[in-house]
Length: 327
Image (cartoon, rainbow, N blue to C red):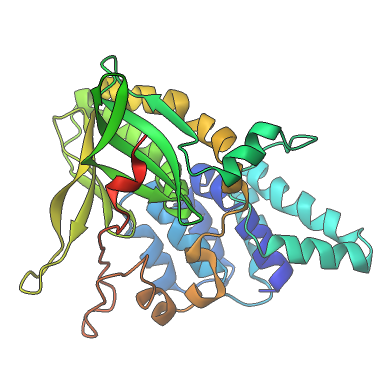
C-alpha cells in the first residue's frame, strides 16, 4: 500500500475501529484476493468487534498497492458506505493539492490524528500556563463522595491521565496507590474500548456469560466478569516463576454508576489535554508493521515473549510514582 493511503487509514483509525464491521469486509477482501484465507481467519477468530477491526487494519496496512482501493470497495459492498466515502473523499482531496500541499499533508500525517477536534482560533492563556505548570490540569470526581477522580498530571514533561482514589484532609486531596495510570496513547486505546464495555454491561441482564479482558498497553488490563456490573482496570506484572501476568493492587474497580460518570466526562479530556489530538499510536508506527516489531515493543509486549509461542500477548506495570500526583 502506498504511504499516502496508509496515512489516510491511520488518521481515521479511531473512526474505523469504532464503526467498522470487520467480518463482512474481510469476506469481500478475501473474495477480491486482497487478503488470504489465513488472514481472514485471523480476523474472524478475534472475540470482540474492537479486536476484529484492529486486526483487519493491521493486516490491510501491510498489503499491496491495490489494498486501499480494495478496502473502499469492500466497505461499500458491506453496506458501510459512510466509512468508504470518508476514505475516498480524503483521497480525492489529496489529488487536488499542489505538490507543496501534499508534502505538508504527508508531514502532518506522520503525527497520527486519532481524535477529530476543532482547533481553537488562538491558544488560551490558561492552556499556556497548563503546559508550563507542574500542577494537575484537572480533577474530576467520578462519585458522590470525592473518593475517586479522573485527573491529568504532567510528570517530567510527560502527560499522564489517572483514574485514582484520593484521601482528603483539611481540604487537601492526596492520591493513594489505588489507581491506574495512562500515558496519552494508552488512554486513547482505553477510550476506544468504552463503547464495547458499555455494550457488555448493558447485556448482563440478557444472559451475558463470557468473561472479557483487554490489554490496553503497559500492563494495564480491562476486565469484565459475567454477572457483575463492574469494570476492573488494573496494572499487572509477571513474576519470574509465573506462566502468565498476575494482577497487582494498583488499579480501580468502577461500578455501573462510576463508569456512567466516566462516559459523561471522557470528552473533557480532549479539552484538558489537547495534545491527545496529535498522539501517535505505537501500533500504527512503521516498526509495528511486522510481528517482530510489535513483540519488541515495551508498550505492546513489555514482558518479552516466548519464541515458541510468538502470538502470546503480555503486559507490564507502569512506573510513574504516585507521589507525583500530590495536589
